[in-house]
Length: 425
Image 1 (cartoon, rainbow, N blue to C red):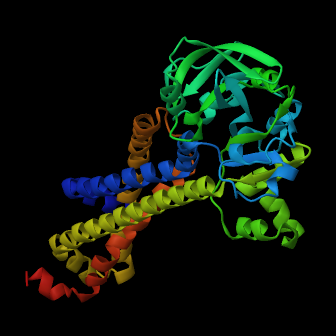
Image 2: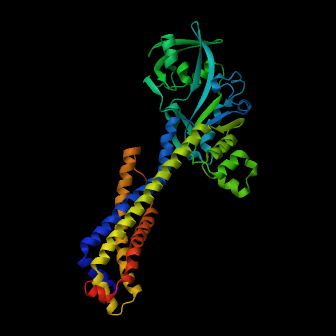
Protein backbone atom coordinates (compact mmCIF):
# COMPACT_ATOMS: atom_id res chain seq x y z
CA UNK A 1 0.00 0.00 0.00
CA UNK A 2 2.80 2.41 0.92
CA UNK A 3 4.56 1.77 -2.36
CA UNK A 4 1.32 2.34 -4.30
CA UNK A 5 0.75 5.66 -2.54
CA UNK A 6 4.33 6.76 -3.29
CA UNK A 7 3.98 5.88 -6.98
CA UNK A 8 0.65 7.70 -7.24
CA UNK A 9 2.16 10.75 -5.55
CA UNK A 10 5.07 10.76 -8.03
CA UNK A 11 2.68 10.48 -11.00
CA UNK A 12 0.40 13.25 -9.83
CA UNK A 13 3.15 15.63 -8.65
CA UNK A 14 6.05 14.66 -10.86
CA UNK A 15 7.13 18.26 -11.46
CA UNK A 16 7.41 19.01 -7.76
CA UNK A 17 9.17 15.68 -7.16
CA UNK A 18 11.65 16.38 -9.94
CA UNK A 19 12.30 19.80 -8.44
CA UNK A 20 13.05 18.18 -5.07
CA UNK A 21 15.34 15.65 -6.75
CA UNK A 22 17.08 18.46 -8.64
CA UNK A 23 17.62 20.41 -5.41
CA UNK A 24 19.23 17.40 -3.77
CA UNK A 25 21.14 16.65 -6.97
CA UNK A 26 22.80 20.07 -6.91
CA UNK A 27 23.76 19.71 -3.26
CA UNK A 28 25.03 16.14 -3.78
CA UNK A 29 27.09 17.25 -6.79
CA UNK A 30 28.76 19.99 -4.80
CA UNK A 31 29.32 17.80 -1.73
CA UNK A 32 30.73 14.85 -3.69
CA UNK A 33 33.04 17.13 -5.67
CA UNK A 34 34.26 18.88 -2.52
CA UNK A 35 34.77 15.57 -0.71
CA UNK A 36 36.76 14.19 -3.62
CA UNK A 37 38.83 17.37 -3.73
CA UNK A 38 39.41 17.47 0.05
CA UNK A 39 40.53 13.83 0.10
CA UNK A 40 43.11 14.32 -2.66
CA UNK A 41 43.90 18.01 -2.17
CA UNK A 42 46.54 17.27 0.49
CA UNK A 43 48.83 15.34 -1.85
CA UNK A 44 48.14 17.60 -4.81
CA UNK A 45 48.79 20.80 -2.85
CA UNK A 46 51.84 19.27 -1.18
CA UNK A 47 53.30 18.51 -4.60
CA UNK A 48 52.51 22.03 -5.78
CA UNK A 49 54.16 23.50 -2.68
CA UNK A 50 57.27 21.44 -3.35
CA UNK A 51 58.01 23.87 -6.16
CA UNK A 52 58.98 26.41 -3.48
CA UNK A 53 62.02 24.49 -2.28
CA UNK A 54 63.28 21.84 0.09
CA UNK A 55 61.80 21.26 3.52
CA UNK A 56 64.59 19.08 5.02
CA UNK A 57 68.31 19.84 5.39
CA UNK A 58 70.96 17.14 5.89
CA UNK A 59 74.30 18.30 7.31
CA UNK A 60 77.33 16.76 9.00
CA UNK A 61 76.59 16.23 12.68
CA UNK A 62 79.52 18.40 13.81
CA UNK A 63 78.30 21.25 11.64
CA UNK A 64 74.65 21.17 12.67
CA UNK A 65 75.38 21.89 16.33
CA UNK A 66 75.96 25.49 15.32
CA UNK A 67 72.72 27.45 15.13
CA UNK A 68 72.28 29.59 12.08
CA UNK A 69 74.37 32.39 13.54
CA UNK A 70 76.00 32.94 10.20
CA UNK A 71 72.88 33.03 8.04
CA UNK A 72 73.17 30.88 4.93
CA UNK A 73 75.11 27.66 5.41
CA UNK A 74 77.45 28.59 2.57
CA UNK A 75 78.72 31.60 4.60
CA UNK A 76 79.43 29.66 7.79
CA UNK A 77 83.15 30.19 8.47
CA UNK A 78 83.42 26.65 9.83
CA UNK A 79 81.65 25.05 6.86
CA UNK A 80 83.78 22.55 5.05
CA UNK A 81 85.63 21.20 8.09
CA UNK A 82 83.45 18.12 8.01
CA UNK A 83 81.69 16.44 5.11
CA UNK A 84 79.15 13.82 4.15
CA UNK A 85 79.94 10.96 1.80
CA UNK A 86 78.40 11.22 -1.65
CA UNK A 87 78.17 7.42 -1.82
CA UNK A 88 75.44 7.47 0.83
CA UNK A 89 73.06 9.65 -1.21
CA UNK A 90 71.09 6.62 -2.56
CA UNK A 91 70.20 5.83 1.08
CA UNK A 92 67.80 8.78 0.96
CA UNK A 93 65.57 6.70 -1.32
CA UNK A 94 65.87 3.62 0.87
CA UNK A 95 63.92 4.77 3.94
CA UNK A 96 60.40 3.78 4.98
CA UNK A 97 58.96 6.95 3.36
CA UNK A 98 61.14 6.72 0.23
CA UNK A 99 58.12 7.24 -2.06
CA UNK A 100 57.48 10.59 -0.38
CA UNK A 101 60.91 11.89 -1.36
CA UNK A 102 60.22 14.20 -4.30
CA UNK A 103 63.87 14.99 -4.91
CA UNK A 104 67.16 16.03 -3.34
CA UNK A 105 70.30 17.93 -4.27
CA UNK A 106 73.72 17.78 -2.58
CA UNK A 107 75.78 20.94 -2.25
CA UNK A 108 79.50 21.69 -1.96
CA UNK A 109 80.64 25.29 -1.63
CA UNK A 110 84.08 26.83 -1.90
CA UNK A 111 86.09 29.83 -3.04
CA UNK A 112 88.04 29.89 -6.32
CA UNK A 113 89.96 32.43 -8.38
CA UNK A 114 88.64 33.86 -11.63
CA UNK A 115 91.31 36.19 -12.95
CA UNK A 116 91.78 38.80 -10.24
CA UNK A 117 88.47 37.99 -8.58
CA UNK A 118 87.69 35.54 -5.79
CA UNK A 119 84.23 34.07 -6.29
CA UNK A 120 82.13 31.41 -4.62
CA UNK A 121 81.18 28.24 -6.42
CA UNK A 122 78.54 25.67 -5.57
CA UNK A 123 78.64 22.09 -6.80
CA UNK A 124 75.27 20.37 -7.01
CA UNK A 125 73.07 18.07 -9.09
CA UNK A 126 70.96 19.58 -11.85
CA UNK A 127 69.39 16.54 -13.51
CA UNK A 128 71.46 13.66 -12.19
CA UNK A 129 70.80 9.92 -12.57
CA UNK A 130 71.13 7.88 -9.36
CA UNK A 131 70.77 4.14 -8.95
CA UNK A 132 68.14 3.48 -6.28
CA UNK A 133 66.27 0.25 -5.38
CA UNK A 134 63.06 -0.49 -7.31
CA UNK A 135 63.27 2.66 -9.44
CA UNK A 136 64.75 2.62 -12.90
CA UNK A 137 66.29 5.76 -14.33
CA UNK A 138 65.71 7.82 -11.17
CA UNK A 139 66.85 11.41 -11.63
CA UNK A 140 67.08 14.21 -9.15
CA UNK A 141 68.62 17.63 -8.72
CA UNK A 142 67.86 21.31 -8.78
CA UNK A 143 65.50 21.02 -11.77
CA UNK A 144 63.13 19.10 -9.48
CA UNK A 145 64.05 20.81 -6.23
CA UNK A 146 64.06 24.42 -7.48
CA UNK A 147 61.73 24.73 -10.49
CA UNK A 148 61.15 28.38 -9.56
CA UNK A 149 64.72 29.21 -10.66
CA UNK A 150 64.73 31.36 -13.80
CA UNK A 151 67.47 30.31 -16.20
CA UNK A 152 68.33 32.38 -19.27
CA UNK A 153 70.05 29.94 -21.58
CA UNK A 154 70.29 26.26 -20.68
CA UNK A 155 70.70 24.22 -17.53
CA UNK A 156 74.16 22.66 -17.19
CA UNK A 157 74.69 19.04 -18.19
CA UNK A 158 75.84 17.08 -15.10
CA UNK A 159 78.40 15.25 -17.25
CA UNK A 160 79.92 18.35 -18.90
CA UNK A 161 82.09 21.23 -17.58
CA UNK A 162 79.29 23.78 -17.67
CA UNK A 163 78.18 26.36 -15.11
CA UNK A 164 75.24 28.59 -14.25
CA UNK A 165 76.28 32.15 -13.43
CA UNK A 166 74.16 33.96 -10.85
CA UNK A 167 72.55 37.11 -12.18
CA UNK A 168 74.27 39.45 -9.70
CA UNK A 169 77.67 37.84 -10.30
CA UNK A 170 77.20 37.94 -14.08
CA UNK A 171 76.34 41.66 -13.94
CA UNK A 172 79.35 42.36 -11.73
CA UNK A 173 81.88 40.48 -13.91
CA UNK A 174 80.21 40.93 -17.29
CA UNK A 175 79.65 37.21 -17.81
CA UNK A 176 77.56 36.01 -20.75
CA UNK A 177 76.02 32.77 -22.01
CA UNK A 178 78.45 30.52 -23.95
CA UNK A 179 81.43 32.40 -22.55
CA UNK A 180 84.37 30.18 -21.53
CA UNK A 181 85.81 30.86 -18.08
CA UNK A 182 88.83 29.39 -16.31
CA UNK A 183 88.69 28.82 -12.56
CA UNK A 184 91.56 27.99 -10.24
CA UNK A 185 91.70 26.68 -6.69
CA UNK A 186 95.12 25.76 -5.35
CA UNK A 187 96.85 23.64 -7.95
CA UNK A 188 93.56 22.73 -9.67
CA UNK A 189 92.63 24.64 -12.82
CA UNK A 190 89.54 23.92 -14.97
CA UNK A 191 87.83 25.63 -17.88
CA UNK A 192 84.04 25.81 -18.04
CA UNK A 193 81.40 27.12 -20.40
CA UNK A 194 78.59 29.32 -19.07
CA UNK A 195 75.43 27.50 -20.17
CA UNK A 196 73.00 29.98 -18.62
CA UNK A 197 72.39 32.92 -16.30
CA UNK A 198 70.47 32.13 -13.10
CA UNK A 199 68.02 34.35 -11.27
CA UNK A 200 66.84 32.70 -8.03
CA UNK A 201 66.28 35.62 -5.69
CA UNK A 202 68.64 33.96 -3.19
CA UNK A 203 72.33 33.54 -2.45
CA UNK A 204 72.76 31.59 -5.72
CA UNK A 205 72.63 34.91 -7.61
CA UNK A 206 76.12 35.64 -6.24
CA UNK A 207 77.63 32.25 -7.18
CA UNK A 208 78.74 30.03 -10.00
CA UNK A 209 76.83 26.75 -9.93
CA UNK A 210 78.40 23.70 -11.52
CA UNK A 211 77.98 19.91 -11.56
CA UNK A 212 79.08 18.40 -8.25
CA UNK A 213 81.83 16.25 -9.76
CA UNK A 214 83.68 19.30 -11.14
CA UNK A 215 83.35 21.25 -7.88
CA UNK A 216 84.83 18.26 -6.04
CA UNK A 217 87.69 18.10 -8.54
CA UNK A 218 88.35 21.83 -8.41
CA UNK A 219 88.30 21.95 -4.59
CA UNK A 220 90.22 18.65 -4.33
CA UNK A 221 87.42 17.04 -2.29
CA UNK A 222 86.54 13.85 -4.20
CA UNK A 223 83.29 12.21 -3.06
CA UNK A 224 82.59 14.91 -0.44
CA UNK A 225 79.50 17.08 0.07
CA UNK A 226 78.65 19.67 2.69
CA UNK A 227 74.89 19.33 2.84
CA UNK A 228 71.86 17.85 1.09
CA UNK A 229 68.57 19.62 0.57
CA UNK A 230 65.62 17.24 0.46
CA UNK A 231 62.06 17.85 -0.69
CA UNK A 232 59.54 15.43 0.82
CA UNK A 233 55.76 15.12 0.80
CA UNK A 234 54.57 15.47 4.39
CA UNK A 235 51.37 15.72 6.40
CA UNK A 236 50.59 18.72 8.64
CA UNK A 237 51.81 18.64 12.22
CA UNK A 238 49.47 17.68 15.04
CA UNK A 239 49.77 17.12 18.80
CA UNK A 240 51.70 13.87 18.35
CA UNK A 241 54.30 15.33 15.98
CA UNK A 242 54.75 18.38 18.21
CA UNK A 243 55.28 16.11 21.21
CA UNK A 244 57.89 14.12 19.27
CA UNK A 245 59.54 17.34 18.18
CA UNK A 246 59.93 18.47 21.79
CA UNK A 247 61.11 15.15 23.25
CA UNK A 248 61.20 11.98 21.19
CA UNK A 249 62.03 9.88 24.24
CA UNK A 250 58.78 10.98 25.88
CA UNK A 251 56.72 9.00 23.36
CA UNK A 252 55.26 5.67 24.38
CA UNK A 253 55.99 2.64 22.20
CA UNK A 254 52.56 2.93 20.59
CA UNK A 255 52.95 6.67 20.00
CA UNK A 256 56.41 6.15 18.53
CA UNK A 257 55.16 3.53 16.07
CA UNK A 258 52.30 5.82 14.99
CA UNK A 259 54.66 8.80 14.64
CA UNK A 260 57.27 6.78 12.74
CA UNK A 261 54.69 5.38 10.32
CA UNK A 262 53.14 8.78 9.56
CA UNK A 263 54.71 11.13 7.00
CA UNK A 264 55.46 13.96 9.41
CA UNK A 265 58.44 16.05 8.37
CA UNK A 266 60.06 15.20 11.71
CA UNK A 267 59.66 11.43 11.26
CA UNK A 268 61.09 11.56 7.72
CA UNK A 269 64.00 13.64 9.01
CA UNK A 270 64.58 11.07 11.78
CA UNK A 271 64.71 8.23 9.24
CA UNK A 272 67.12 10.15 7.03
CA UNK A 273 69.42 10.69 9.99
CA UNK A 274 69.53 6.94 10.53
CA UNK A 275 70.16 6.32 6.82
CA UNK A 276 73.13 8.70 6.38
CA UNK A 277 76.01 8.08 8.75
CA UNK A 278 77.54 11.05 10.55
CA UNK A 279 74.63 13.30 9.65
CA UNK A 280 72.25 15.55 11.52
CA UNK A 281 68.94 16.11 9.76
CA UNK A 282 66.60 18.94 10.58
CA UNK A 283 63.39 20.12 8.99
CA UNK A 284 63.30 23.60 7.53
CA UNK A 285 60.37 24.56 9.72
CA UNK A 286 59.48 27.76 7.89
CA UNK A 287 58.70 25.73 4.77
CA UNK A 288 57.22 22.68 6.50
CA UNK A 289 54.94 24.70 8.79
CA UNK A 290 53.66 26.96 6.00
CA UNK A 291 52.76 23.92 3.88
CA UNK A 292 50.69 22.43 6.70
CA UNK A 293 48.93 25.72 7.45
CA UNK A 294 47.99 26.29 3.80
CA UNK A 295 46.61 22.76 3.37
CA UNK A 296 44.66 22.92 6.66
CA UNK A 297 43.06 26.24 5.73
CA UNK A 298 42.06 24.94 2.29
CA UNK A 299 40.49 21.84 3.82
CA UNK A 300 38.67 23.98 6.40
CA UNK A 301 37.31 26.19 3.62
CA UNK A 302 36.06 23.12 1.74
CA UNK A 303 34.36 21.85 4.91
CA UNK A 304 32.59 25.20 5.45
CA UNK A 305 31.36 25.31 1.83
CA UNK A 306 30.12 21.71 2.15
CA UNK A 307 28.21 22.54 5.34
CA UNK A 308 26.63 25.61 3.72
CA UNK A 309 25.55 23.50 0.73
CA UNK A 310 23.92 20.94 3.03
CA UNK A 311 22.05 23.58 5.04
CA UNK A 312 20.86 25.36 1.88
CA UNK A 313 19.57 22.17 0.30
CA UNK A 314 17.80 21.16 3.56
CA UNK A 315 16.05 24.54 3.61
CA UNK A 316 15.06 24.12 -0.03
CA UNK A 317 13.59 20.69 0.67
CA UNK A 318 11.71 22.07 3.70
CA UNK A 319 10.18 24.79 1.52
CA UNK A 320 9.14 22.30 -1.16
CA UNK A 321 7.65 19.87 1.35
CA UNK A 322 5.72 22.65 3.14
CA UNK A 323 4.21 23.70 -0.18
CA UNK A 324 3.45 20.05 -0.91
CA UNK A 325 1.70 19.71 2.46
CA UNK A 326 -0.60 22.64 1.73
CA UNK A 327 -1.52 21.20 -1.66
CA UNK A 328 -2.23 17.76 -0.20
CA UNK A 329 -4.14 18.95 2.87
CA UNK A 330 -7.42 17.40 1.68
CA UNK A 331 -5.70 14.12 0.88
CA UNK A 332 -4.20 14.05 4.38
CA UNK A 333 -7.56 14.95 5.94
CA UNK A 334 -9.26 12.11 4.03
CA UNK A 335 -6.57 9.66 5.18
CA UNK A 336 -7.16 10.76 8.77
CA UNK A 337 -10.93 10.43 8.35
CA UNK A 338 -10.45 6.88 7.07
CA UNK A 339 -8.48 5.97 10.21
CA UNK A 340 -4.85 6.44 9.16
CA UNK A 341 -2.50 7.03 12.08
CA UNK A 342 -0.20 10.05 12.22
CA UNK A 343 2.91 7.84 12.00
CA UNK A 344 1.55 6.19 8.85
CA UNK A 345 0.98 9.53 7.14
CA UNK A 346 4.38 10.75 8.33
CA UNK A 347 5.98 7.56 7.02
CA UNK A 348 4.52 8.30 3.58
CA UNK A 349 6.10 11.77 3.53
CA UNK A 350 9.45 10.50 4.82
CA UNK A 351 9.48 7.64 2.30
CA UNK A 352 8.84 10.05 -0.57
CA UNK A 353 11.62 12.32 0.69
CA UNK A 354 14.06 9.40 1.12
CA UNK A 355 13.40 8.25 -2.43
CA UNK A 356 14.06 11.77 -3.73
CA UNK A 357 17.28 11.87 -1.69
CA UNK A 358 18.41 8.50 -3.01
CA UNK A 359 17.86 9.41 -6.67
CA UNK A 360 19.36 12.90 -6.29
CA UNK A 361 22.33 11.55 -4.32
CA UNK A 362 23.25 8.88 -6.86
CA UNK A 363 22.96 11.34 -9.77
CA UNK A 364 24.96 13.90 -7.79
CA UNK A 365 27.80 11.41 -7.24
CA UNK A 366 28.20 10.96 -10.98
CA UNK A 367 28.11 14.71 -11.63
CA UNK A 368 30.43 15.34 -8.65
CA UNK A 369 33.00 12.95 -10.06
CA UNK A 370 32.92 14.91 -13.32
CA UNK A 371 33.37 18.20 -11.43
CA UNK A 372 36.28 16.78 -9.41
CA UNK A 373 37.92 15.58 -12.64
CA UNK A 374 37.52 19.04 -14.17
CA UNK A 375 38.91 20.76 -11.05
CA UNK A 376 41.95 18.48 -11.05
CA UNK A 377 42.68 19.05 -14.72
CA UNK A 378 42.20 22.81 -14.43
CA UNK A 379 44.23 23.41 -11.25
CA UNK A 380 46.82 20.62 -11.24
CA UNK A 381 47.02 19.38 -14.82
CA UNK A 382 45.93 15.84 -13.90
CA UNK A 383 42.63 14.45 -12.58
CA UNK A 384 41.88 14.08 -8.90
CA UNK A 385 41.42 10.50 -7.76
CA UNK A 386 37.77 9.85 -6.85
CA UNK A 387 37.53 7.69 -3.71
CA UNK A 388 34.62 5.25 -3.84
CA UNK A 389 34.03 5.95 -0.16
CA UNK A 390 32.51 9.25 -1.31
CA UNK A 391 29.53 7.48 -2.94
CA UNK A 392 27.90 5.96 0.19
CA UNK A 393 28.74 9.08 2.21
CA UNK A 394 27.09 11.42 -0.30
CA UNK A 395 24.05 9.17 -0.79
CA UNK A 396 23.59 8.95 2.99
CA UNK A 397 23.92 12.73 3.36
CA UNK A 398 21.44 13.26 0.52
CA UNK A 399 18.85 11.04 2.19
CA UNK A 400 19.49 12.71 5.56
CA UNK A 401 19.02 16.26 4.25
CA UNK A 402 15.83 15.15 2.50
CA UNK A 403 14.52 13.67 5.76
CA UNK A 404 15.62 16.70 7.79
CA UNK A 405 13.93 19.01 5.29
CA UNK A 406 10.74 16.95 5.66
CA UNK A 407 10.76 16.98 9.47
CA UNK A 408 9.15 20.42 9.95
CA UNK A 409 6.34 19.96 7.39
CA UNK A 410 5.65 16.48 8.77
CA UNK A 411 5.04 18.02 12.20
CA UNK A 412 2.31 20.21 10.76
CA UNK A 413 0.26 17.12 9.84
CA UNK A 414 -0.86 16.75 13.45
CA UNK A 415 -2.45 20.23 13.30
CA UNK A 416 -4.69 19.36 10.34
CA UNK A 417 -8.27 18.47 11.31
CA UNK A 418 -10.20 16.33 8.78
CA UNK A 419 -13.42 18.34 9.08
CA UNK A 420 -11.69 21.68 8.37
CA UNK A 421 -9.55 20.59 5.43
CA UNK A 422 -12.33 18.51 3.78
CA UNK A 423 -14.57 21.58 3.85
CA UNK A 424 -11.77 23.70 2.42
CA UNK A 425 -11.14 25.82 5.51
